[in-house]
Length: 329
Image 1 (cartoon, rainbow, N blue to C red):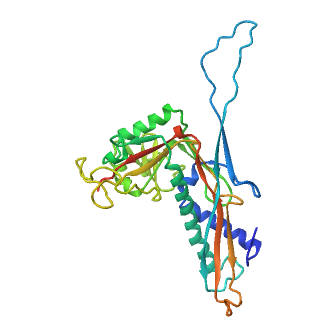
Image 2 (image 1 turned 180 degrees about the vertical axis):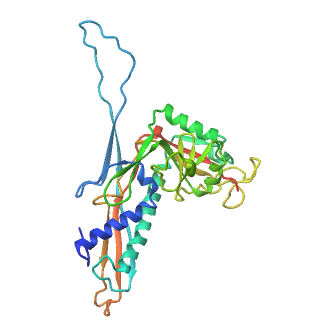
Image 3 (image 1 turned 120 degrees about the vertical axis):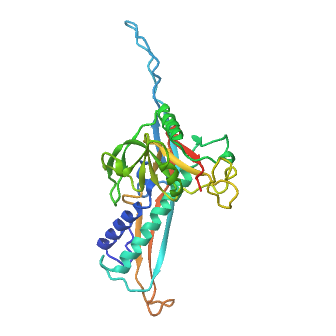
């Protein structure tokens, strides 16, 4: 590990702080199946799934061995990529975690890292083929908001395809850990969708939950078996829908003509896989103190940087659903 101009002790602190701050902006990193990237290995990650056996009843005859079954596996691969950024600093960084310049720089970079990871994962996961539209048969037809009936259809679709409820989420911090949540499917959406969700019949806000155990960051409440959380990285398809005033009410529109179409990702357990943000080899902080050189003779400039590897991959399209809706203006 490259510690730059700070000690291993301080660098471990900085790495941990960056990861903890990154988690707050990394909602989609909390529910994927985790696959660690071993150091000094290939950049291709492989996830393996064994398929269900045929459960057609087979009567066993006396003294006759049945033919049995053969396990069938599916491998899903993804290529990880390295990401990162840095900020320039002009104050001398002391080799201690109390230094405010180092701490503030790491905090800001941590927020950026989490948001960057989340955008990468959203870009991959929104491409799933399991789709439910608020109205019409094409994205260009959409000008209708989310409803309780649409949520029930989404839950029924995932259950019919034998998706399992999520029961835990990955916690924040430099070590991989999980915390329990009540069994449910999770829906992740932009804040613009929140008022329409709250208007749904049978919507239950978080403050009326019987227990606060396992609240998801950004969670606003639930409709049926779907718990909704806000993630503004789930950006809409601008002007991709039908006329914004064509459904009896006005919808949000980027240019004022056609409805913006908002994707809501709804998923169950093991729907997708991630290379985790938490854990060794996931992200490293590098600090360069200002040093005298030909380009910086007065030692006025230094940098604080982060870099790390990540990717995401859909493991089972049937266990993840993209709902596409408009939003009331």
